[in-house]
Length: 136
Image (cartoon, rainbow, N blue to C red):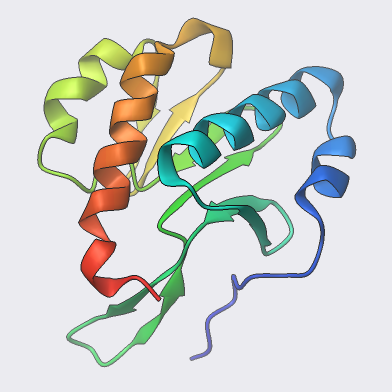
């Protein structure tokens, strides 16, 4: 099985320009927030994920691949924020983030202006630190 979501050469600004005005602005704000926390430049992963850095993962099943160390996708219904639950300290911070729902590896936010940016920065920082040893 090959990995489907991989880095592309599509400029992030071009992708953000295809979004509606609100999601485009939220995407641009998230790019700056993630960039300031991680020190990494954004790269498109697949058609709709903006990722920062990358790391190698290996599962007991033998499956392995690369994935962004921090990422988001400004989807139409919600902003998907990837990896924010991966650090043990994240559980204590998530209740302070603001209105959100959580999946296995994602935190979903309807509106960026409804969440606490300082808490988001800390969650991104913690997430980034979890993958430091596996960074490519």
